[in-house]
Each structure stands twice: as structure tokens, then as C-alpha cells.
Length: 95
Image 1 (tube, rainbow, N blue to C red):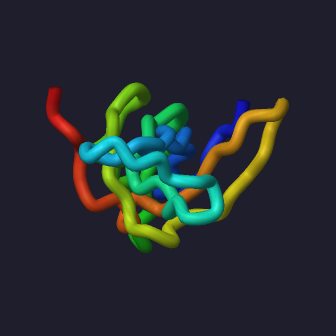
Image 2 (cartoon, one colour):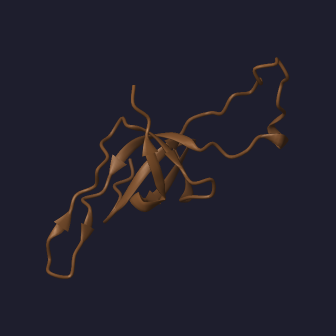
């Protein structure tokens, strides 16, 4: 597994819908990047100049929305992940 540093989180992108509400199938070439994912690892938080840490407001298992082109794509053991800063995350999806 990947252990993120600082204010970064590791996110597993969730697949987007392949069929629209009207029943139209969207081909892979026309799909947009997923903007929803699940947090799989969280860094320790941002380190301030005085040496204290500001913890991240996320936890493993949170479903999140993130900016369209946020993060860096990483492939590990055949799985795709995104490593992104906490600031790239727009919100947490409440259950």
C-alpha cells in the first residue's frame, strides 16, 4: 500500500456511470475522468513553520468529490489510485 506524506491522501477512483438515465451507453472514449472516490490512506497532515501538525479532516473509507484533474495517477498491483492534496478535495459525500 502507499503511505502518503504531509497533507496528501490516496484515493481509489470510483467508476462512473456507463449508462445514462435515458438508457444511452457511454463508450470508454467519451467518458470523463471520475470525480468521486474513496479515501484509502491519509497522511499525517500539514506541518506548520512552528513544528505543529494540522491533521487532515478525512479518514479512510470516506467517499469524496474532487476536482476534475486533481492528483497524480499511480498504478500499484494492477489497481489505479490518485495521490492528491487535501485542498484538491471538494467535499465528503455523507451517507
